[in-house]
Length: 116
Image (cartoon, rainbow, N blue to C red; front, side, top):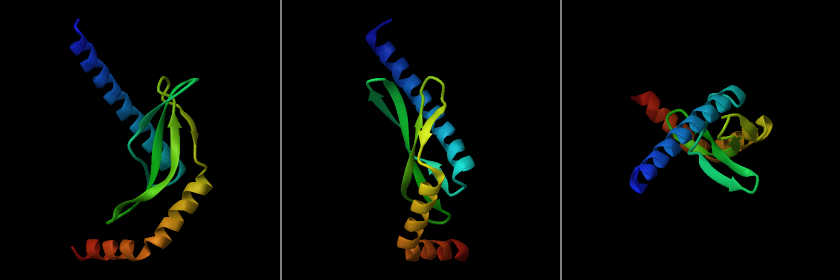
């Protein structure tokens, strides 16, 4: 096996793991925070104790899409277990703040979506 083949396998397995982490974090967001919250792009983070995946939590609005980041979820790459996450009350409060700040944009997007 040459170096190129090894690199391709490594990239493929990294991509598959990232997709699995994304799926786990999205499920966690849905069950914990509600249907307006999803996981954004997972990022691998190497720490002295080992590697974890960190996934930003995004607040989303129908008709508008992603509004902004409101928390994080940390995932163990070996077990795909949630190691820790921003508490529900903090995520929901951050989502409410974003909804207030971007209220006019969100309402305009909602009106456009209803008009079609």
